[in-house]
Amino acid sequence: MSTARKSKPHGRRRLPIAKATRQPVRQSPAPSAPVTTNDDPDEIVWGAAAIGNLIGRSERQAYYLLESKAIKGTRKIGGLWSARRSVLLAQWGGEL
Image (cartoon, rainbow, N blue to C red; front, side, top):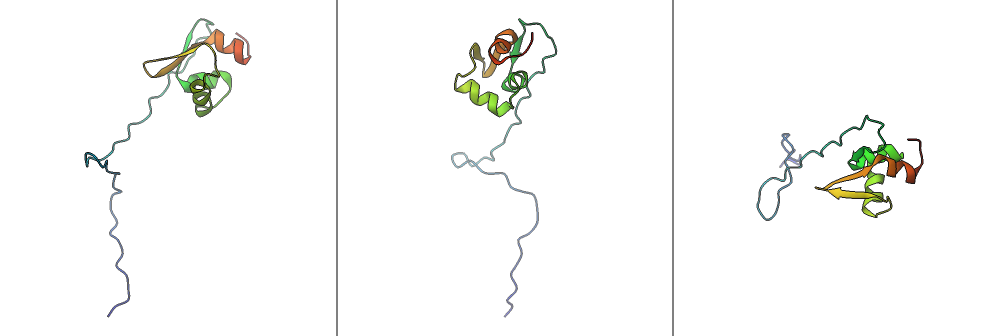
């Protein structure tokens, strides 16, 4: 009688399976936020990453501030946060 354990076969990592459909759960990549390059104060800044970059916060911190309505003058359009550059800079400091 052998006391050696059988090792699991090496192979591809399996995706988690959704219980209801028994289909593999595909995780879509997060859409990248557009990078704003214009210094126009009336420009609309799109996405939590771009807003966070403008106010000196990380994307996650900016998203938290947006969801908790701590950043005034923002709105969510089609699932994407937006704000005017001038409003953000007036509230969070900085030069236009």
